[in-house]
Length: 389
Image 1 (spheres, rainbow, N blue to C red):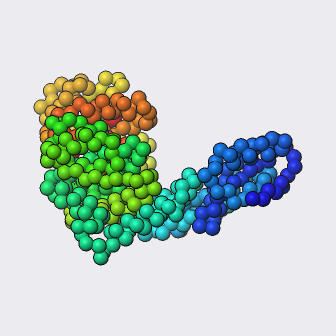
Image 2: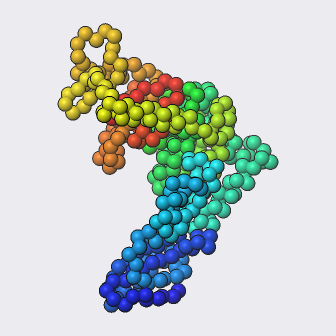
Image 3: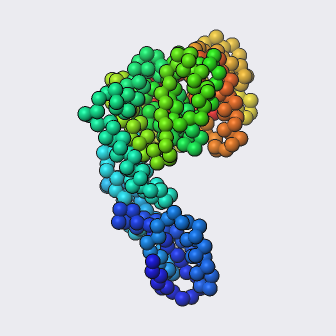
């Protein structure tokens, strides 16, 4: 470790560099008076014993771009901007890796490095899973093929609601699996609907459209009841959080296998382009008219507006409760209701959403689609109903 004081007046800036594959990728800025610098550096390093500090340079710097890195594909506008602004480093990701399959690329690994994770340990677990899923491994012993085949076969048999139960400490993994599966399989009028964050309920609330996958789940008693009743359960265990490396790969592999079994391409995203085209057409209308096309609300009470198709026999205006009741009356076992929550995610909001999800007829799923990030994909699943918030 070396230190070099480039300026002796006023404020100084501390940059802490961690090497990732030989490239320094992280810098933290500390501003302190000279007489307090030594004390602050010592305290900072003592509070981060897991980080490998290779060099400390003390400089007077106001160049904010020096503290920025970019992760992008070659030839993008981001490359131009980062180059022009003299970003500290630009990580060029292989352009043939789709976004939802990029957890083990620069898009996932650089943030992991900045968090101080042991990348060698994480990638070793991933490589172990790669070998376990190799072509020469018998199907019965291949975890990626088995998981994907189960997902695909269950979906073809009507069990297209993939319900993910995770341990609390890896709950965010469910969100990643949700996007991976929905965007990869939701197309051409079919798909697998991933369900994450749903508390496991009593046996009677589930129909015959569910496949449960447990990932280190703490809800073993509830899963055992479901298994004894004949629901298919896939159990995956984690020895520690570094097993996420193997989970990333096995789920990407399994999703590809499931897509093949469903007869669709798991690597394209036709609905993404469809959404872009629809947005472009809407913006053109705005350019021409100076405003967006107005929609007529079915019902409104001043705070809530309900939009949808007007019933043919409507002889008078509807109240908000009447409009919602009319819509919900269409729901039947095997359907699902998607809540599109364009709201800030807070503990209070999450609690309210879970209360709503718990109130549903037997055999009907109430799913939450956060900020419309995948509704175009899981909307392909047959039997869909939708309420927008």
